[in-house]
Amino acid sequence: MFEQYQKTFTSYSGTDMVCSINVPNVGPVVFGELSQISYSVYREKVPVRTLGRISMKGYTRGMRTITGILGFTTFDESIVYRCLKDIKDAGYRMLMDEMPQFDVTISMANEFGAKSKMSIYGVSTYTEGMVMSVDDIMTQNVYEFYARDIDPIQRTNEERKVKHSTQGGVVLL
Image (cartoon, rainbow, N blue to C red; front, top):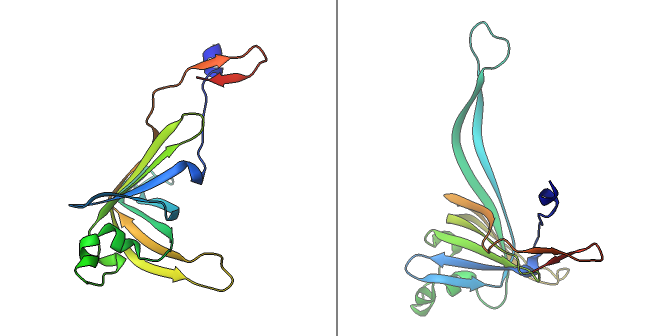
């Protein structure tokens, strides 16, 4: 019975996360510039109605759409050129929506030793925007994307041991 109170939960701040983008035939590229990422999953569901019943019988499950936003702090070069160095070296100008589909992996680790990761697969951007202003402290590129699949956040390290201190607190080992 006491075991249910020993389970610990941890969280991460933005500074605990590292993003890498894996472009096919290029490999993973770590991006410290990713300052925000958001996603949403939408699945069509329609009520099923039958003759002789007022209420619905159930739901159909339709197509699933994964979409989101990637926000990058802009420094002196587009992130496209960091991903596809060969394109830049050849002198071609390329926008984000011309990139091949790529995967985004976010690795997390906090000061307590907790580790997790999350992956978004088959990312393809469809809008690109940039904000520059004398009122803003930084310049940012924002990309809306569709994705084929997603692995929600999950722990990647072993379950840590919990020790209860004599002062009544919990110590993570």
